[in-house]
Amino acid sequence: MHETGTDAMELRAEAAKLDESDVLRDKHAEFAGYGLDEVAYLDGNSLGALHRAVPGRLAEVVEHEWGRLRIRSWDESGWWSAPERVGDRVGRLLGAAPGQVVVGDSTSVNVFKAVVAAVRIARSGGLAALDGGSGAGGGPARGGDSDRDEILVDAATFPTDGYIAESAARMTGCVVRPVPAGDIGGAVGARTAAVLVNHVDYRTGRLRDLGGTTAVAHAAGVPVVWDLCHSAGALPVELDAHGVGLAVGCTYKFLNGGPGSPAFLYVRRDLQPRFDSPLPGWNSHADPFAMASGYAPAEGAARGRVGTPDILSMLALDAALDVWDGVSIESVRAKSLALTDFFLRCVAAYVPAGLVESVTPAAHAERGSQVALRCPDAGEVMAELIRRGIVGDYRRPDVLRFGFTPLYTRFADAERAARVLAEVLTGGAAEG
Ligand SMILES: Cc1ncc(COP(=O)(O)O)c(C=O)c1O
Image (cartoon, rainbow, N blue to C red; front, side, top):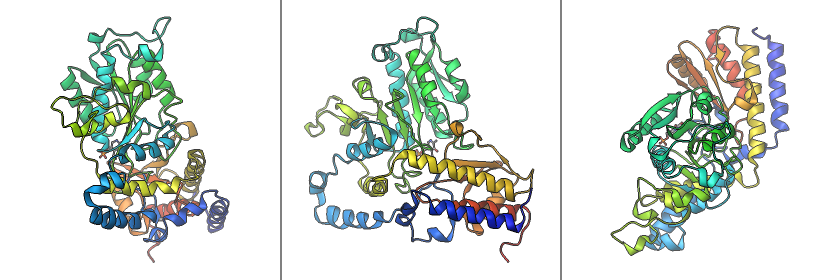
């Protein structure tokens, strides 16, 4: 039901109160400037906002470390070890103890490394030796190494993962079998060589059961590769606690690393000796400067490296991560759920019934940090929203996406977005 002006005033007043009592409210100022306050920026699930520490730090890196120290910076400025050092900072937000995350390359490239490595692990004894399960007694069937010829891929996956899994499958003599993420537990079997799942569906914002899916696949000896692009920095992932084997994700969404900032690769510590990378570059060599003709893999997270790291982007990300000092991912999750709940309430209050339909689960346990609304003409509606200062995005054919980044999104942004959405959908005269 379309609310009256009085109700709108109440929702605005409630937003103001929620913003005032928000434990993360001071974080907003670290992103302010650059026009962030002029819009409701709800596209941090695509590209995070610029943190104020980044421009100055990047200028210093360019002018001093590159400009003056030049090649000395590989050692003296810590450039060489930045992938593992920044990896540990990202790892803290993923519930990963130090030494298991390396930053570099794109998510697409890391999906390739992880999926091929997963197949190789599955075919060389699987996870049995490490995870201790036998698969007997009613557990999922275990395959012999040579029987494993299927890669199960989240049927709604972000496209790059599917394309890369397809190529990885051809290279390893497997086939890809698309399976709805919720059914993967039941589909894992003796033929499964690897599983690839998006932790949060990029289109609907649905959060998948990371712990349950991992446990079932591992009991069958099969590594799962989790794509954490839409959960890293948005909610607790608890990689170590869930015994996840392999995970990848990007840093330019909820981690605010900047356009094209390097991705991450997590390899569980006890799996690292068995991580057989399909892209063994000189950076992951045990002794890179020996310039040996034969490859010998490095120990630890560095085994996931390939070539020379992208230092400017990596150090922009490093600076952006300062905002997390003293911030718990649990507090971010609590605010994310409060924001998406409040936005959904405002949409229900302002938008006449039937004009949009939420495809984001109502249950907290199944919701990421975005709200997706199905709406005819989503492209035109979003273009008009952006003209009116509400910046989200849309996915064809009919999904409006609104991302909520608790470090800088305010309840007032959620209220304003829902109100302007109602005006756009009902032909309201917001432009005056
Ligand atoms: C879930 C998911 N996986 C993978 C990617 C691709 O990442 P990249 O283009 O950085 O390789 C994206 C990009 O948005 C994504 O959302």
